[in-house]
Length: 230
Image (cartoon, rainbow, N blue to C red; front, top):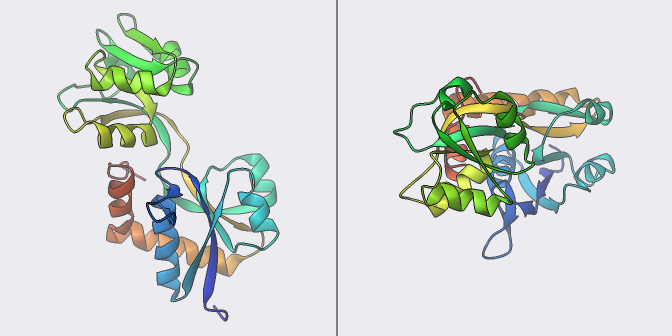
C-alpha cells in the first residue's frame, strides 16, 4: 500500500487464464482478476508473466506479492504458500447441446459421449458410465473437439477451458455444461503469514462474487457463468 503497487504473477502460456494478446501484453481471466484487485486496493497493478514452473518461486523470492495463475490447491503446495478463497472455476465436466437432458452420470445411458484417450475425463467416464453408454475415444483434444462440433457425438467429457474454446469456434453447437466430473478450482497464492493481505484479497473476491463482477469475467473468458454454489 505504501509503494502504491501490487506485483502480480500471471500465466503467459495458458489461455484463457493468461496468454499474449495481439499487442503481446498478457490477457485473460487471471489478468482481469489481477487488475480488479489492484483497482479495489487503490494501487497500480504490475503484471509479471510467469510459467507453471516458476510461478511459486517468483512468490517465494518476493518478485511478486501474489500469484494469480490458475493455481490449484494441494497438500504439498499448502506447506509452502497460502491460498485465498477460490476465484475461478476449473473443472472437468460433461457437455452437450442445450436440448440434450443429462444432469448426472446415470443419464448417459443410450447416449454417445466423446473423450480424449487417457485424459482424466475419459478415465472417470469409463469407470462410472452406465450400461448402454457409447464412449468414443479420440487420440487428442483436437479430434475430440472436432467430433463434437461435427455432431459425431451427443456429448463430450472435457475441461471447462476446452469447452470455452469450443464455444468460441462453434457458434452453431456451443457446449452447455450438464454436470461436473471433477472439481479443482483456482486460488490466489501468497506467502505464508500475511494475514492482512489474505483478508483483503478474500474480501475483494467475496465482493466480486456478490456484485456479479466475477461472473462477468467468467462469461468473458470461460464462455459460461460461474457454477452454482461457487
